[in-house]
Image (tube, rainbow, N blue to C red; front, side, top):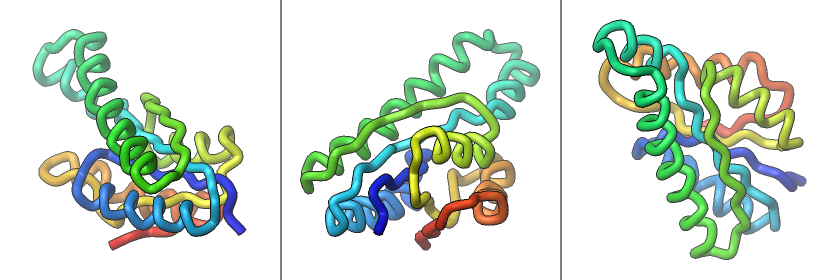
Length: 143
C-alpha cells in the first residue's frame, strides 16, 4: 500500500500526535518515513524586517529548531523499529511539503490538523488546506 510516508512536523503537540499515527502506520506497513520540517520563509523575513535581526542568524536558529523536530521523529521511529530519514528545508510550507513529497517519491503525506500556536498559527493554519488542495497523493490529517 504505502511504502514511503512523508511526515511533516513543526515540533508542536499536534504534529507530534500526527507523527505517532504516521509512525504506527509505517510500522504496520513496513514503510520508510521521511520526516520533514519546513522553516517558513515568511517568518524569517518578518523577523529580519521587524526585529532587525541578521537573516543568517535567524535561519540558523530556525533550522536548528527544525532539526530538533525531525530528530525527535527519528528517535520516535527508532523506538518502534521504523527507519526515518530527516529533512529540514526553508520555503513556503505547503509548497515545500508537496515538492519534497514528490522529490522523495512519497506516496502518503501525514500532518497535524493545526500547526504552531500564536501569531504564526494564522500563517500556518492554511498549510493543511493548501496541501489537501494541491497534493497529488493521499494526505492523512490527524486531529
